[in-house]
Image: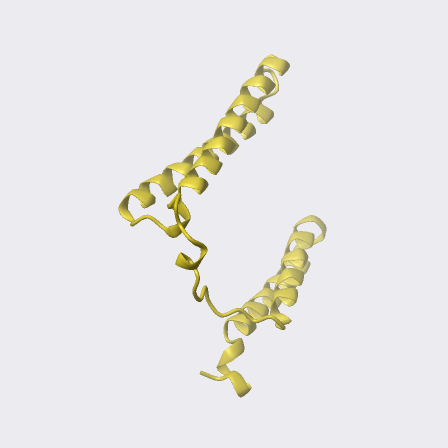
Length: 133
């Protein structure tokens, strides 16, 4: 997790510097920009702190070993459906929900119904047919 901690720490430092630069540039008059950038910095620091806190309690991963070999991390990462159509329907429902926020809430309601259907279909994809568990 060392790499992830450094990555999110750098993101936090970057946004903190940009928030200060933006604040000085605008004379601290425009309140939305530097506040939003400060919140982004806080989010980066928060994720880095969480990963650091969790990483202290877990054993080192093969990724963190400087002398580690590739075969130390080899193994199954999970089951993925390479030819599934459900992610497409779920993405379409997300697009309809966001379109509905801008155009009309009835579109969001339709997108929400479609999203529940697509999510259930994706979750229970292997519970029927030839791949039933």
